[in-house]
Image 1 (cartoon, helix red, strand yellow):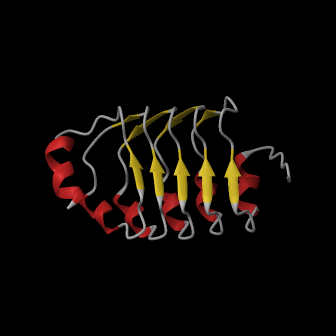
Image 2 (cartoon, one colour; image 1 turned 90 degrees about the horizontal axis):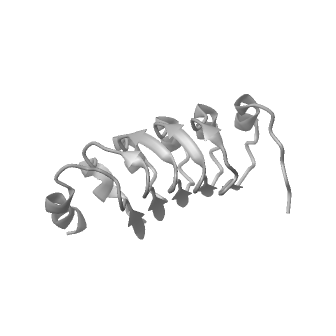
Image 3 (cartoon, helix red, strand yellow; image 1 turned 180 degrees about the horizontal axis):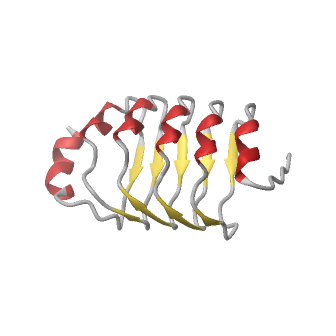
Length: 136
């Protein structure tokens, strides 16, 4: 197993060959670096159970190879960007136990590969009424 220590978020964008980024339960604080969107070969990202704040960067939609995105158990806020529908290979999206809000983007239905979507304890107005239409 390769262990990499990155001093500063700016170095993160230079790890172009990185396929998986597992940083769960590391007591990470602050916001998710925008540079993460430069890692276009990533297939798995796990930032679950940290102390991350801020919005989920729209730059993540640049990672077309991403299959699994785990960001549950943080303090992220804002809404899910409609640009996430551009990640056609995404199979798992777990964002539960955050402070996300807003309207679920209607184009999330375009996820052709999505097998798991977990938004438990996320405050989206009218979600129950629209979930039926989302799943059909």
